[in-house]
Length: 343
Ligand code: KG4
Ligand code: ZN
Image (cartoon, rainbow, N blue to C red):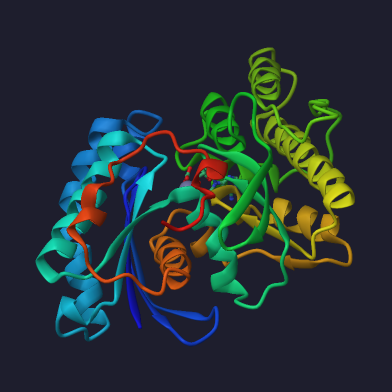
């Protein structure tokens, strides 16, 4: 069984081919990612219009490359196509959705539009197909900071979310104010790693009794501290990262105590952060701890193919229907709203 994934929700164009190996096991045969980072570098952040144009340039060449690299002789060999249909930048999403619909229509391979956050969560199953459920999953990316209880492949209960900025957005904005180049998150992590100790501290936001997060106050405090000369860029990066990760770990530990999951999962772009990976491994204690390899943490199409597969599998793999092409790009689509029985 072969599944094609397509992802264009933000600033990476990605196409992947997965092969089902039985049970929950999916082999990633190809997972190509074209990053647009250089095109946005000049502007200090992702420019939606540029993102859409870059996706347009990249999507067909990537499709061709995946076909070549996996020795696929005909697209009709596919059993399923999955594409990110939200949440994300509308114009960017539209490029992937249009490409996927065209391919599905031309080949009559069934198509599913999937939720990007669900994709991130499914990356944990690519890493560990037999992970014990329920899983408490911390999804941390440029657009989201969610604590999600995954009871099965279709039931996602959002326990907490950010009330303002996503944690990755905080990393990116603080990195920018410290004069660090794009990509902000990884460069801030690198700057922080050069510091052993500093007197600079930012108190983590306390959102109890909820499981929500807040990073906007911390972002402002870090930016102001740097402007006032209270620390070097490296020290401010270290103090910001420490405070943000402490908040994430505290809320995660509280949710573990209350909901008693069997696995702790960590996913999304910020899960590539080494300090966060170490902190969450510690928070997991005796639980199984799963965090995908970094390339499956940041945006990629393998996770989208996986999400499409798990949805379609329990629907006994629908055959092609033109009615299934009616879905649209959805810029807003919370994970709990994506948690519905497969139609
Ligand atoms: O999941 P992702 O690739 O795209 C979205 O869905 O948003 O996540 C991108 C986010 C960016 O904010 C980026 O700065 C952050 O993940 N990120 C990191 C690291 N690598 C990526 N943040 C902190 N440390 C990292 N090593
Ligand atoms: Zn993402």
